[in-house]
Amino acid sequence: MATIHHVTLEPGKLELLAGWLPRQEWFRPGGGELVRAGGFRLDDPAGEVGIELMVVADGRDAYLVPLAYRGAPLAGAPEGALIGTSEHAVLGTRWFYDGVQDPVVREQLARLLRGEAVPQMQSESDTADDSVAVAPVADAAVSAAADVAADAVEPVVRRVLVPGGEPAAGQVVAGYTAPDGSAQRAVFVADGRAGAAG
Image 1 (cartoon, rainbow, N blue to C red):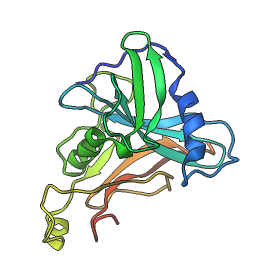
Image 2: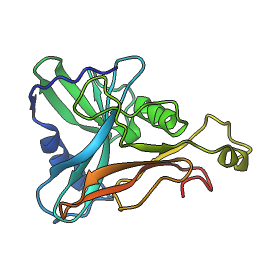
Image 3: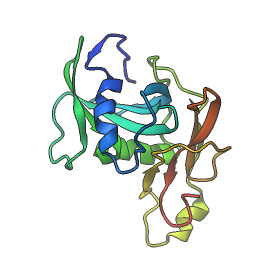
Image 4: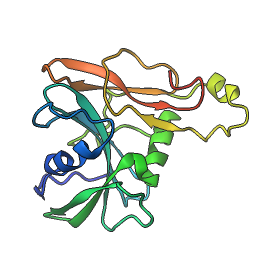
C-alpha cells in the first residue's frame, strides 16, 4: 500500500499540469484556471511508482490525467510523456509522467479493469475508495476477441470527462466535481478492445 505524505511539492501538481495540458491535442484552451476536481489512486505492487488518476477542471471542461510519480527518469519514455519534475519534502526529486504512457500505470489500469486492483482514496493511506465503481471485463468481451489473450486488456483513458451513469462491463466509473460545481460521475477508464469500450 502506498503511503501518502502530506507535504509540499515545488512546483505543485497543478502548476506542472498548467504547463503540460495546453500542449495536448485533446485540451481545449481558454477555459480558465485549473482546479483539483477529484480522482483516486492505485498501488504499484512493487512499491516503486506512485499512481494517481487526477481530475482537474477549468471553467468549461473536466480532464482526467493519470499521473506516475517516479524517483528516477523513466528509461525509454516516449517524447512528451514527462509532465515535469518536482521537489518532494520527504522523497526528494520526483519525475511526473503521463500515466497513459507509463508501463506500470498501464498495467495497473489493466488489473483494475480485470477486477484485480483496488482503487485507493486520493489523500489517505491504505484506504480503499468504495465510491469507484468497477465492472470487470466480462467473459463475453474476452470471447468476442478470440485472438486476444484474456489478460490483454487495453485500458483507454477518457481524457475529457462526460457525465454518465453506472459502468458497463470493462469500465470504471468514478465521481468528480464538474466545472459548474455539481457532483458528477463519469467513465474514467474502459477496455479499448472491439466491443468492450462501450
